Each structure stands twice: as C-alpha cells, then as structure tokens.
Length: 107
View 1: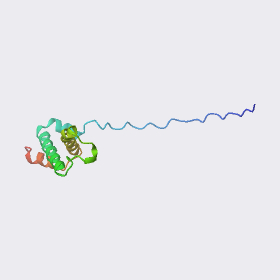
View 2: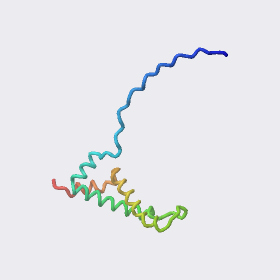
View 3: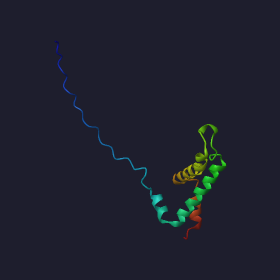
C-alpha cells in the first residue's frame, strides 16, 4: 500500500464579523411618529384609500383569465389591492399624506 503524506491543515482565521443587518420589520422614525399622531395616521389612511382606488382604476383589481380565478379570488382581490396601497404609503407614497398633514396641522 502506498501512503501519501498528508498536508497540514490550512490555518483559517474567521472572517471579521459584520454588524447585524437592520430589522426590516422594525418601525422607522416616521412610522413611530405616525403611530402617535392621529392627524398623520388619518392623512396616511386617506392616502392609502386614494392609492387603492387608483390601483383599481388602473386595472390591478382585474383578475387575469389564466390565473385560476374563482369566487374566492374575486372576493379577496380587494384585500390584495389594499395591502399593495398600504405598502406604497409605507414606502413614501405619492406625497398626499405629507401634504395633507402639513396643511392641516396647527402651527
């Protein structure tokens, strides 16, 4: 039997640790402000409804023919459009909530 000398194990140093990634579910400063200010919450709610109606008018509420369809899909489609509108507002929206908030707040 032929034996080959084994190579010494390569010394590996652990890579430097990276700082933890920010939690995407953690509320931002703007989210925390919206939670405490009822006027900002109302303005964001109005913007959410406005964007949801815009999405419906744009045809995002229509179900494609090849998607499967059915009564359940038709019933829950409005929830999807509403969730999309909420996400758009959380991402900065179209500026309607901010404009309403500043126009209506007491200075």
